[in-house]
Length: 102
Image (cartoon, rainbow, N blue to C red; front, side, top):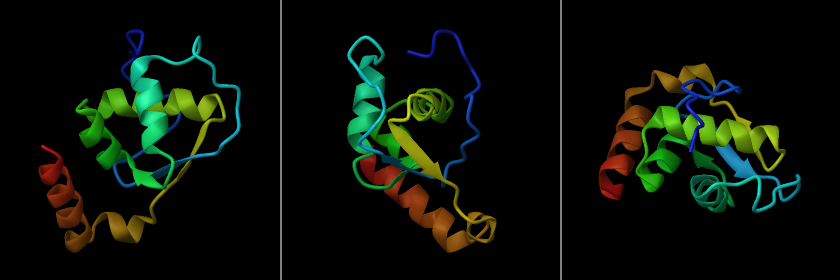
């Protein structure tokens, strides 16, 4: 899935929004099952935390998979403004969303 990598090549945080670009050279030989599932989840802007929850994979693994897709040009990431990352209401909403996925 990650070929032993533990760090993504592109910096991502839990609140980063990732969405498919609809372009990029992504073929079956370049994608693993997790990559294909992640790409499918990115058809609308979706947070890294939500993608990890839906894939049922650790966040670190999800970040590596997403960074692979970013390098291929299949998805882009928009970083959440830092003023929101410390907002307790937003953090609670992310936690609640992850709980509902379990």
